[in-house]
Image 1: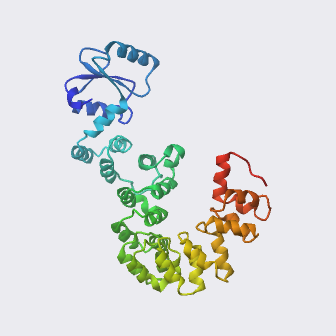
Image 2: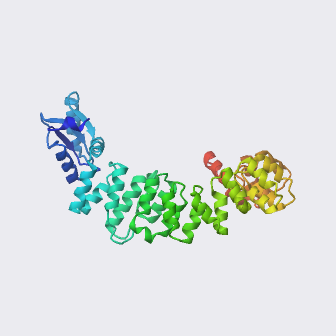
Image 3: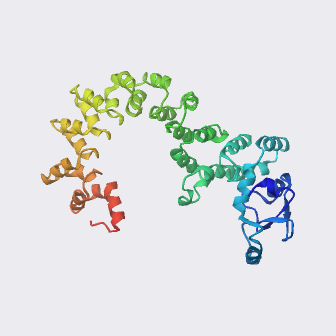
Length: 390
């Protein structure tokens, strides 16, 4: 189907339009010089099945298909509206909305899932929130819901999330869309929702420009979230190093390079917790023979197996305990400890512990709760569709 081929011809619509309002749908057809017929005739070249078709309309559509499917195209309303949306002149639309100040029409387009994201962001900038929060009035609620509905992944699994501020929080946590993050950060109601700023600050797709904007807020929670962002820009890394707490956060979370590793040697404990440490970096930290650094390494979810074996020689019980709870510790080591009846509480919490051992540990009241809270055992129970034994 091509809109140009429909010029000066007519379509027959059963039911109603879906993405476009009835008035907007008619207006778009008129712009493309496409007629909208109420009955089938010689000038009809396209039959469209819309939403909310009556049984009577469905029967007529079926009859027409049997008689005319060789000469007339039959499509769904979604296909036609998608094609119409592709041919919207963005500049003309934006100017029209600016001059008319038609808020309802603007909202209608923002709620239209068929328009491009690029056009959506341009339209969103035009919307006035009236100095109120995202869900403080009906109009703002509609636009907020439209943002969440458009970009939220698997929204069908989380009904009504579009009607609460938590919807924005979930959306930010799952998105990799930098333009979306910037659009949300630029919205007027953001000033009522510092937690949303915090969520954006922690997202690795928050770019340098947004990081600078967020840093200027001087909000302690925002700064802490930025310090935990592994893609923090270099200038902010150096700035945060002047603060002990923020510096440790950066050392722990930043995506390390050899240069950054050298830079953070003043904060070795934070550095030892960083998951992106290479084996060589871990060996260097281990060589300091410092129990605090070694304990941090033992907690590290990215610890190298060779380092695990080295740390197991430690006489520090906290270090040993942390290793037996660390999922990176090889299962063979966990199995040996279980056979010797050692560190069973830690093994019960460890996701890398073989299920057979977890199953035995949950029979003992001392370890049952730890096993029940172990995600690996929970997944096993779900997969096998069996109940808890407590």
